[in-house]
Length: 213
Image (tube, rainbow, N blue to C red; front, side, top):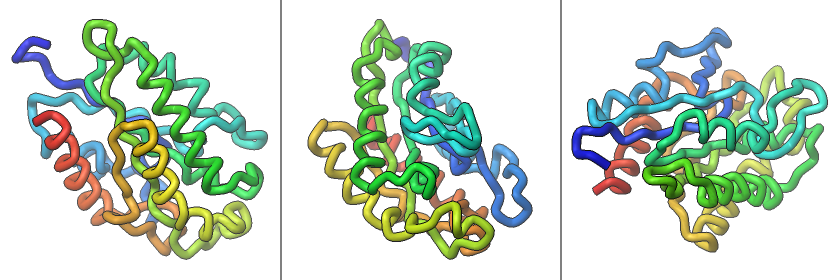
């Protein structure tokens, strides 16, 4: 990598990465999204690539919402944006939906399988694999309109961080627990208010700087 080349960072996620605003159900502007804060904090030497899709799962086909399977899009996504220096994956919240009926362990294993795809890819510099950072989403908040859709999801969501970290240690890749940084909004129980995006963007910035020291 040449000294003047920007570090390319792909953020692969769901509505938390897309920037869903729980107040008006719209999208935060780029500068208010955690990815935008990450870009601002890291500065000119980095290029943040947003790949957030509302409703995206780790590996499950959604019988209601359709094309939301993260695994099916991951390789084309990597190849579209290569060469990459770091891939950040934060998925799992949508896997908690009652219609998938998956345990916290199964969701963590599914997220781990995505990291393994990144590690086996040639989407990094010089046909090597990029670094991978897996982030476990925070526990759900107070569910409102989506309470039935996420039935039993709260208890499962509290276990995700532990299992995600276990897989990260077992397979020796980078990990961050969003539940130790942010809180899901009680307006809908799923998404983040503006202040949480700010906190998270700064926390990820710190992690990224540690990675590229």
